[in-house]
Length: 419
Image 1 (tube, rainbow, N blue to C red):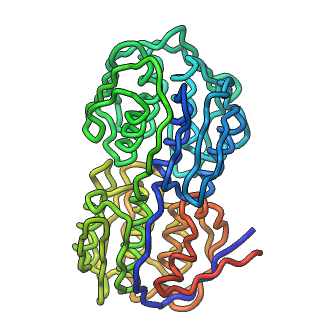
Image 2: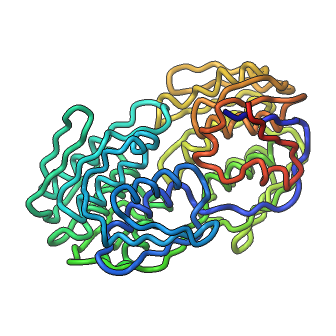
Image 3: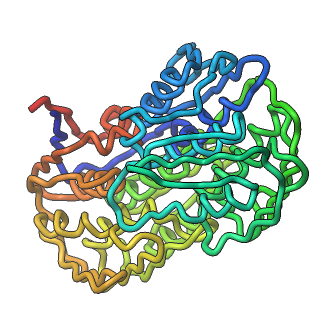
């Protein structure tokens, strides 16, 4: 058990480098299972707990995974013969459901434990199942085990009832070796969807349209190994952008793709920040109290739900009243009670949070209830007067690499203490 202690009130200044994208990495690693020949080398992977967990699952399936450096691994899937992902590690993370699409695509069969992950509301996998069934698979759930079987996978037209990143990627994984063409309509357009498609294409898949709402996949007979570099983490970058505003600082964030951050940049500029974009950098400066805004989370290219909680922390000390509407997950306001311990004035009504900005937050002992709630509490702690203790920081380690080291490098005083 560990906790963070943060001394608040420090202006953050300097340059911080962003790691590879968590949401891409946890899909790229299962995707490597689909290679029939050769080794996949994945570069720019974040050194986080979720990546370690998914690597361990691949090893349990029979894959050979070698760590080649701090951010590079090689995956040899030639010896994977099991299609049963029924290990306890599967329960630890939501993205373990990508094993369903990958193993189904490889073997036409898969059995897996219902995935775990952060408790942020109802997160059904009905669109994943709909996609598998459209490809010709039969799906049943018995005693918490999802069983998917197909004599053969055949391409089909699939319309997603809701925009789902997970379902879009899982259908791509299963369909890239199916017979004929698969069309996914109302597909998710997030950067990590495009990243997975690009990786699969590097392995020999034929996927077109990723990044739009219609993706077309022409099945191929086999895939081969390749070397591929993960995109930078849009959410980690956004977290540091928000921290610059929160502390009235001046932070240059490097190793980013600025176009992935446009919705975040627009909102921060609306709140009073100065934004300067470079080729692979973005600088955020602010020397005054942020302005209140209204915010609604939306699928990409809208404002990402994963940054709603850190943004709520900033708005709790902004000038005026803000209304934050969470359209993605109804359980994503659990951090609000913790912010209230620090003096925030927030009222939650259904999927909306009404935030009356206070002059200052004060340090307190708070608990991270999930990954992005933990990031919100770090932002709040950096803003607050006095010290903030954050418990249950294992949630944070799932998605942020060496976060205390990165914040300390730009002027924070953030310590990890063993309890």
